[in-house]
Image 1 (cartoon, rainbow, N blue to C red):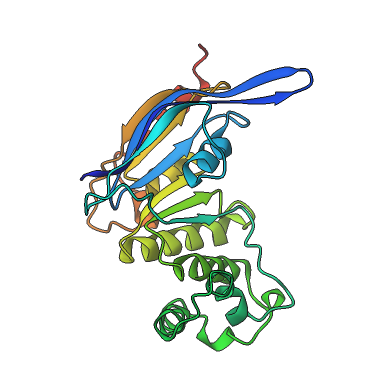
Image 2: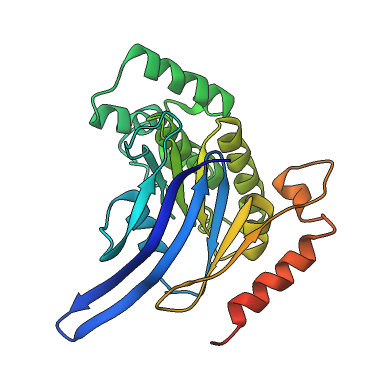
Length: 255
């Protein structure tokens, strides 16, 4: 599959009165159209910093990001960013939360609103459109956050540990459900996670970062032999434990 983004030797440092702390060093990898890429690494290694650079929220100090759109244009792909918290506003109904992005961008067109209505129905939230976020379960809130993100029709979805606030059982169900929905929508996804099992079950490829300053330690394509390709079934694949062991060894390897 062609890459829609290629990171070339991305480096970044944080500066303060006491000096600088290098967070990223010579990070290079590509992201294929329609691919799901998981990024794992030690706590504090710079995963969120890297995601912020891809999103355009931070500018790299060194390196470049190359864009390869299918139509040959150099336009940067439209980004959707899901954070660790759903950030739904309690004073707005579910419907007014999921249309917030459209409202901000002045895109409350009939076509976009019709798409929102369809997503609410498909994701089981149509009956809750007039409820407040506090009346939803954790999984339903994450679905609402996803609809808000998809309403703007992004090409690339960036997920920064979006399921970390959920209990384990809900996390298993919601992560599988949401990633299935993203695949059905034909989107490209980069997800940060500390959960190695989650990375294996959701991703087509896993990028393993080293400790700070982060470098790419390993790129690991994931190929599971399954009749049922759902993320939940992936944990029973015969190759699953081998991937888990290899990832653990890479993460705990000392330079």
